[in-house]
Image (tube, rainbow, N blue to C red):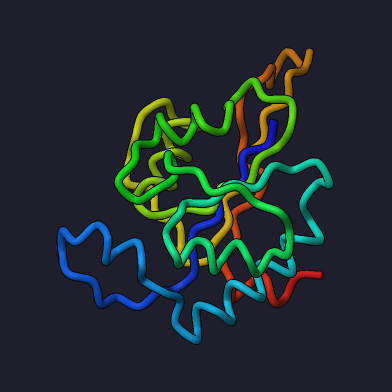
Length: 163
């Protein structure tokens, strides 16, 4: 299974601390829209046809995922007040047969990546509009087995250079 974590692009920082409803309404900045469009177009070309696309219901995540140009599902477990374990459960990691793209938030996505790859939640940073692609193949390779591995980590500035 592939687990692709895509952090939302840059959003307006003006929400009152502790105001959950206001936080969910934060929109992308013009720079965030450009980065979402760039990464979304690149991801669209890279993703498998059968990928499941899931997004946090926060406006900034919805605006980011819409730049992908594919159908997506809003999932409450991906909201900023969720937990890494809830995100993995919603994705069906590691047993689902289809790959999944998750559009979400920091520090949650970094915690998901560290939990999958290192076995515990740590403060791993994923850049705004950045992608962290993890794969796990059930294989017979004695050296690698079915351990998850990093397939790709890329930010919006570098994506423009990739073809």
